[in-house]
Length: 96
Image 1 (spheres, rainbow, N blue to C red):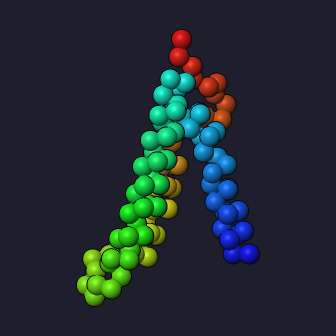
Image 2 (cartoon, rainbow, N blue to C red):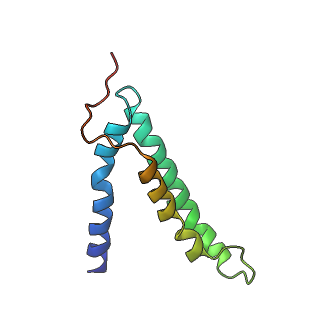
Image 3 (cartoon, rainbow, N blue to C red):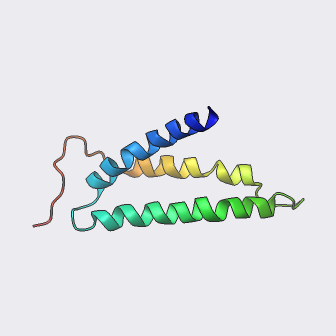
């Protein structure tokens, strides 16, 4: 049941990715604009973060405990959402 709840939350996040990146990037750079941030973020936070958390947890004088560093990533996401332009009433950009 816990997995179903987390997958539901994850699907809320992934449901807006295609629309957000389609409106943010022009047609020629749309694929790269979607693939690069998504895969770099997945590699950094999905691959390195658990390893770094496991390595930092037993250290008594860890500079930043893992829960503190993982609570900063939503702040970065919120800053990105606030900085992104509102394109609700605009036509999609195309390259001629």
